Length: 102
Image (cartoon, rainbow, N blue to C red; front, side, top):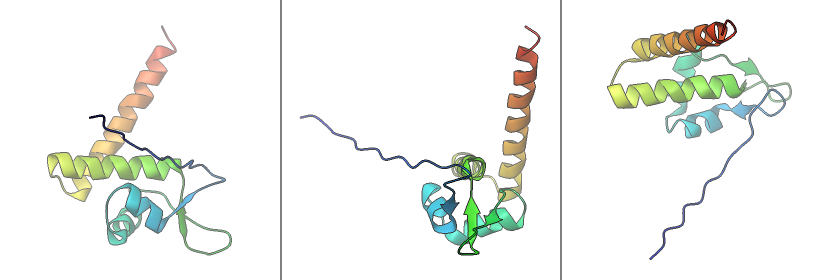
């Protein structure tokens, strides 16, 4: 018997940001969790032009998903997960700079 897995994707960028509810769903979290990320400055948000509600770009989606994964996998609090995400981004940035010298 064969198993079929169906995957869906949503393009996220500056022209097509996601809403608070969508970001919470992408991270399998409650909207209050996303609000705490924004309140603590872990995830950048901006106000939508038409609705005035928060919208999130791909950078926010990536950071939020990383925080959610770290909290789930390592059972760390929000502050620790945010620090870990910052450090991982710094390592990626530094590796990118190092590759310029090769």
